[in-house]
Image 1 (cartoon, rainbow, N blue to C red):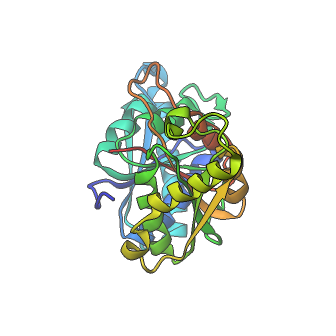
Image 2 (cartoon, one colour):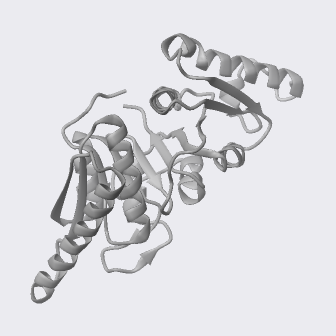
Length: 284
């Protein structure tokens, strides 16, 4: 895991309720880690000059409200707000190069003020950020359950597993590692024929998960590590466990470019509907 960076935890704020939920969650996480919090509000770079002062005034009000929420839930955290001009996605992605963690709400407002079911800003953050991205749905996403991490066959989730182990140790909660084997790509089973018995597939799935977790108990001896191998689709299995979790951690390849960006089907689906905060960790 990367060490503390200059910006600590960066949160995108836009005045929406989900963004304030992201501020609340981020402030608690910052206090837990001893990191500073940067609240980032962005006004459109092409704002009408005649209305510019009004736009900036509203943005300052948004920052003020976010700062109050952060101080309410994490009075000991170092919090600062910053107002910038440009595109929200571009500014957040740029700031992620100096951040430990980027936090966004699961829905919010686009730059014209229209509400989005899941903003393009959040999708850009997940796909392009240089640091892990947390997607927070609603207010009151606090403690109370363990942590769930998805473990894949190809190793994309290996960095996510390291983060999840660290998070579980930090919080003093158990970690559940989930691996599904229903829809395994053919190249991941090149030693098996298409008609391989299900019992053999399940046995190899258990072996794969054990290999992925090898050494975890020694490196994170304080973490209670649980495992689950399931004959199910990844999204459905992870959502079932996330309903009782305080954090869901997954890996994602992401893709480059603000145009034509690509999120994996699992990360996209979970970003839209995870019932608890979702942490997406892409390979460095």
